[in-house]
Amino acid sequence: MLISLLKELNKKNITLSVENDNLKVKAPKNCLTDELKNKLKEQKNEIINFINSSRNEDLISRLDKRSIFELSFSQERLWFLSVYEGEDSKTYHMPFLVKLSGSLDIKTLEHSISCILQRHDVLRTNFVKKEEKIIQYVNDNHAFVLNYSEISNADLFPLVDNELLRNFDLEKSLLFRASLFKTDEYEYYLFVNMHHIISDGWSINIFLKELSILYKSPSSQQTKSLNPLRIQYGDYAAWQKKNMLKILKNGIDYWKQELKDIPMLLLPTSYARPAIQKYNGKRVKFQIGKNIFNEIDSICKTHKATLFMFLLSVFSILLHKYTSQKNFVIGCPIANRKTFDIEQLIGFFVNTLPIKVSVNKELSFLELLSDLKKKTKKAYDFQDIPFEKIVEALKTPRDTSRSPIFQVMLILQNTPQDLFELPNLKIENIELQHKTSKFDLTLDVNQINEQLYCSVEYSTSLFSDHYINNFIEGFKTVLNHVLDDDTKKLKNINIVSEKEKHWLLDECNNTKKDYPREKTIHR
Image 1 (tube, helix red, strand yellow):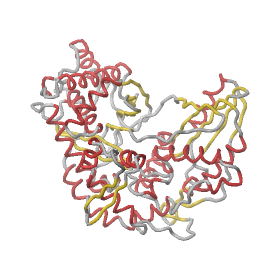
Image 2 (cartoon, one colour):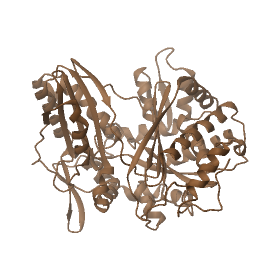
Image 3 (cartoon, one colour):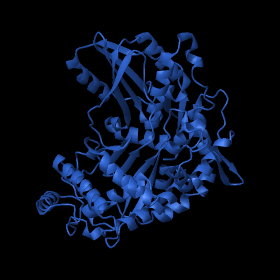
Image 4 (cartoon, one colour):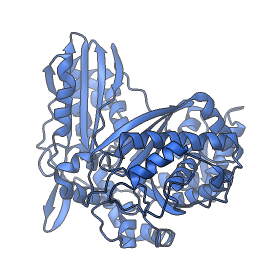
């Protein structure tokens, strides 16, 4: 959201500065539209905080020639989960596959990727236990090799599936892998897989952007074609640990109070919940077209809300209808890249905000939207608190059957992506078959221009395909109700037909599960 706005301003040569805690805007004539003015007003405090932190070059210091670092809090939790889950730790892989059609210089591609690994220390990092403490160290013994093979089209996905099944050894192996498959004279597939402990979604965009630049550059100029990085991920991890007392002081009490005694979300399930959480999953996609998007956008502009706040409200209504619960938590990831230096780094920065939702059926949609708008803004004020520290502070008892604090997640991706281009090549993203789910259920929304490309990732240990298809139809139904009349009370929003209601009740009450039998699906 903020990064998207800053990129938009940069394209229009609009500059921002802070003087005496006031935001100053300098813009070319006719560039500062009313829409941009409203966005600046809405995000004023967040922008001021961003500029103040960005201008302080000493905020994160470069640690001289050090190869051993502490782990960030996010890395510590992911290391624990990876070790605890063993074979299931493939949930924390970050793979992608692109098709390259045309004339490809394989040596240049391999050298370009190697340059990226040398540029970002975290891509050459391993994790070991030293004196009962986990440390990360930059392992310069790793030599990158682009795995190359010539295969038939029929063999492509079986080979990719085999790659997906290969675990990473956090202590010894390179946590970045790349394979190039040639299926025809001018047809290639580049498969890349990274462990989440060294990467996140933003990092993939950085990798592709830098690969584009390096591949286009003459070999003698490759290392000079990218601006040098002032800091590395290890510097960030060390800074986070050093400054954590100050960071926690500014926010942990808020989260402890906000999430005190919050109940877990008890979605009815198709199958009995396993005693130990399983990570088998699937993904079902659907789209929201331009006309509906424009209606959503109109409501957001009228009520000075963001697209995320709107989607959170619709999603909350649906979850309330399925569970009858008035209070629950939805996990919402944020990029957590608040300075220019961090924006440029590959690494695991993403944080999760556990946003508490309170739904009263007597409220109208607009009243719920207003409430969640305030909740979201407040959560952003305390976004620096690592989710791992919130879990610790709440002293949540370990439940092996589910994730702590929240069981469902909402993701909105609407930051413009840099174009991945290589000369003399047509590039196409290839969707990989989805076989894992970190949570019970995740609604993932990707805004591209005036369309929303949505998917529901779900645990196949809990939900049937039919259940999820009905869930998606329920989301669309709530959305249509809201767009027809945004003043309608929540109790008057019906999400299922009688036939679907009976199916849900039969399916969800036929198994021994943790959903209270006295509760029904709210109509």
